[in-house]
Image (cartoon, rainbow, N blue to C red; front, side):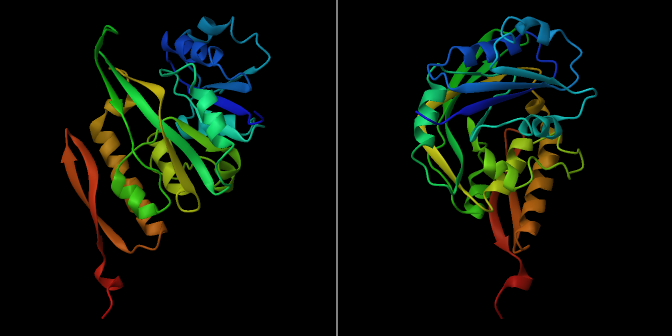
Amino acid sequence: MKVEITVLIPSYNPGRYLRKAVKSVFEQIYKHWKLIIVDDASTDNSLSTIKDYTKDPRVQVLQNRMNMGQSKTQNVGLKHVDTPFILMLDSDDWLFPNTLEILAKEAEKIPDDVALIFGNKKIIHEDKNGKIVKEEIRRFGRGFDEKYEFILANIVPYPRLYRTSALRFVGGWPTDDPYEGRYLEDQRMDHRLIEHFKFHWINELLYNYRRHTNNMSGNKDLMNEMKEWLVKDSLKRWGDHYKPVYKKMGGWIFVEKLIPKRKNLKK
């Protein structure tokens, strides 16, 4: 197996969670990996909890002098990647032992126009004390090669194994939004990539997604604001042919349909 993967962990005050994320990389059956951890000026002791792992020559730890936010932090890591694929791992999540092995085998099969490989995820709901209150499996069910279909699917793929050259082709994670790339960086990148590449799904459980009280994704008002901004920005960049119609479920907004704009209708 020739495919090499860099696991990229952007990290900001993850506390005790970071060690489990890093440990899950070391427990991989697939051994041809590198690990880059970019600490975004954390004020906790999270890096000290993984000192034993950072002695491994496959591990590189980078530290921002000031807090830069998610996208800029990931772009710092991207500059240091020298493998053909990058797996994103949030600092409070973790992988299954066979995650990289399955993804690497799939990466050997896909054509060059595939920029993203993803699978299924387990969502672990925790209370404020860290106790698991519920678990659920999220199966995405399909890949994508059309940008408007992707918007209407309202999904955030996990895990995200990116082709490194594709990330660089679109200029890395964008930071031209009102929050300079701090929020919804994963969806912004997906919208950039789907303009030029395909997304490939495999029906395998590959990622453990921890949902807890400190998740940024729990800030519904902010996330909904950014979702509207993102969709508007993407549709305008793609030719401004459609107007989005939203629906709300559980406090979250979703794109229900796209209505052709009158100026684009044939007379």
